[in-house]
Image 1: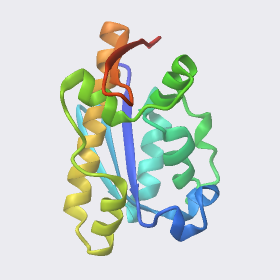
Image 2 (image 1 turned 90 degrees about the vertical axis):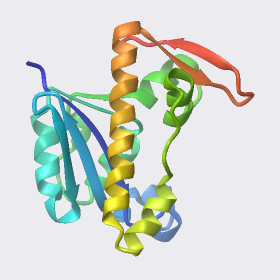
Image 3 (image 1 turned 45 degrees about the horizontal axis):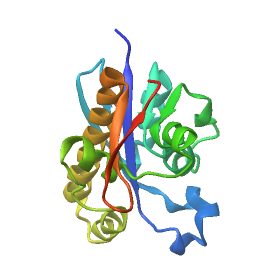
Image 4 (image 1 turned 180 degrees about the horizontal axis):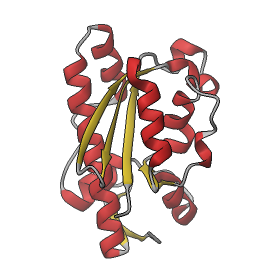
Length: 177
């Protein structure tokens, strides 16, 4: 069985706190979540288990995420010398940008495709980290991984996704997954 690992993480600090988006690896991971098709379940990783998270990603037949090449992997590069961009990876944001020539949010896809919206946003997760509310971060991150998996599986099965443009119109885009 092919092991697809869906992945997302949250950070301890914002871009502003580390001197801008060129310093993503300094944001530090607060919590990471994976869903493995081989395992059939989720795994939650605190910063103290970041090495185990990286090992899981390295063992995957395919890592699927949304903006994971530019953001999530770069955060993890603060913990390892291994170049995670060498892993077999589908960054759905990159794939969609190649077709559409503009960025989409995971939220706009989830809302248009499934009628689901995100439960929170990254800056809230940073505030939860400061307050020691790791359970809230875990729930939020698990939900994002679930949405990532649903979007990918829908794209694989239907060869298209739906999204809402800035005017609120529901449009479709073909995906090659």
